[in-house]
Image 1 (tube, rainbow, N blue to C red):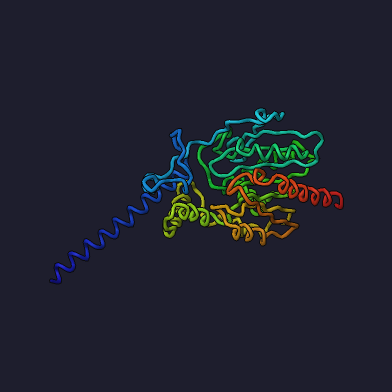
Image 2: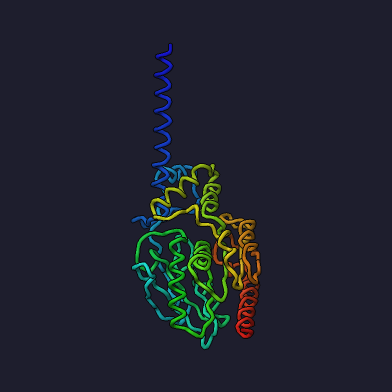
Length: 328
């Protein structure tokens, strides 16, 4: 009896070890698929759009994310632009489109979200230009026209933000610099300001997550799947795969180091980032700030939700920047 019990115990322990190893192997390949672009030409649909068979497949094989490309240019929106390439300080080059607006004294540096590219931010750039502001649309490392492969989920991209600011300060010396980041782009902008010595004249955060772990959990919730411990495993193995520490990527903590005028713009029904998370970032900001909720767009370009509301918020920010500049 004792021998049989010991044998069953060994088999049970072996089964537990195999299960743990198996789950971690799946998590590693899933995390790698989220940080390295696939050779597939078809992108996996959004989590909430997946059928149950596809959800099971994604859990096993990971997502298919082709390298994001720019299918449109400013020319498609009748905007005059100049293409620039400049080093990101890490041995790679970033590609950017500069859209001038006459003698504008304010330059918006616009940064896209995860799995997107600068072309996805053209509606925002067009709206900024219509208000009379110049715009520099930037592709992060590994995205669009920039060099490199894969993504670092806003951590390495913070250094791309720094490089874009340094490039802009040198080329457009008389312009006030405003960082406009959507989702991951917002997280990168906060991190650049808090940790890499970037001093913008203003900051716009659109649909920006509070913690990387939180936004990964939201993807599981969107598929009606338990988030813990799988989200934690994805953050850990994603960090190993991309050479980053995902648990240290927390814009809500970095916000306390941001003192420039700032806007936090957020969709009321955003399935990826809740209003509560957005307000936690807003509450941490130390300088002049405004928070604005938008009704219809869930997670994307909020200018498409309510153009007049969006314009009013942007004007309020730029008025504050200009007032501050005049008083210095």
